[in-house]
Length: 128
Image 1 (tube, helix red, strand yellow):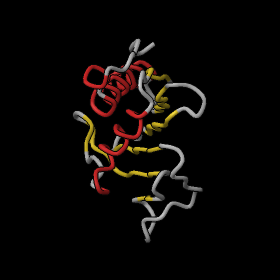
Image 2 (cartoon, helix red, strand yellow):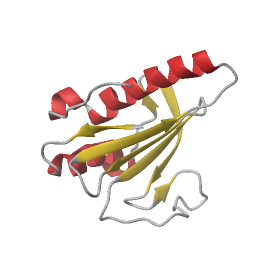
Image 3 (cartoon, one colour):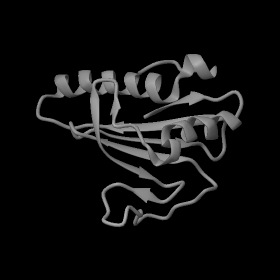
C-alpha cells in the first residue's frame, strides 16, 4: 500500500475519469494484462453478468479496482480526508522473492502509468 500526494484535489477526478474514459477501461498496464475492472464510483463491474457491482457504489468518491491476469489486485482510491490518492496492491505466489520483485514492478508501473505523477505534479516517494 502507498499513496501519492495530490496538490490540487480536482486532479483526483481528472485522473480517474481518464482511466474510465467512457467505460473504456484499460486492458493493460505496462506489460501486465488486466482481467477485470470494478468501478465503485460508477457502479460498473466487468465480472458480473449485468456489469453492475454487488458492492455499494458512490459518485462522491473515486475508487477503481483492477484485477490482473497474474492474480494481482490493485485498488486505487481518493482519500476522504487528505490530499492523497491511495493504492493497495496485492499478489501472492509460492516464491516470495519472485512475488516481491513482481509486486515492486507492478506498483511502479501502476503508479507511473495510471496516476502519472510527473505529468500531474503528484508527489510520490516510490515503492517502499
